[in-house]
Image (cartoon, each protein chain N blue to C red):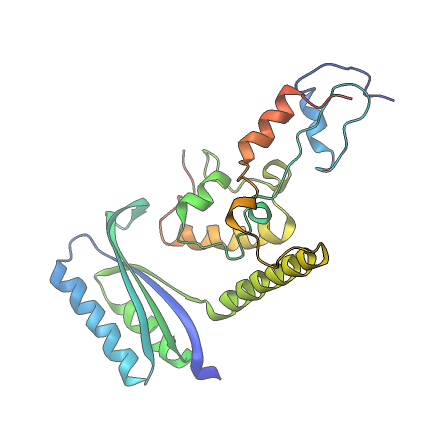
Length: 152
Length: 98
């Protein structure tokens, strides 16, 4: 069980690093993951992005997001390795499997409630796209409030 | 009944403090009903990488908007807090802006 945790790793590579360096870092992570018999589910490269504040002397950096399924030991090792790598200016590891599970459960619950209520009203459980309520924006609600259109 | 003012539009700022679900009483006064954005849009997971989602809750100064202003429910405000902290650490959102 503890082997199958899902983590999200985000790291910011220094703007001085070349494309090759970024690729190298990725293979490095991949190798560690393989050594621990874990799996690298997804890699996302956001490319160069401006930082909200300076980190050291860097004003921008390359963001890479990796989704990894593995053990805590593995993440500990990756964390240690990234910490000592100079080209990485910032990194963050977040465990996401429990959050995803909670989100899934909430979504399923909502669907089930909706289906139950619809059946109780004698409708098919799934709403057809045409009867979906229009997406009322927050702004609309605000407008009503400001104009004081509620009259009795 | 204290709310006999009957004026339209917003009354004094002090009225913001009331509970979100307050019904309008008496005249045409209507208190803006605050709805939790995440409940309304059915967002189950507040993703810290989604700056567009978080930015409405970060006013100019870079602080987190309090619940009493944004209308976020307690549960989602807590989740929002963590998401913003993470985003800050990744320099997606500033800690402070002067």
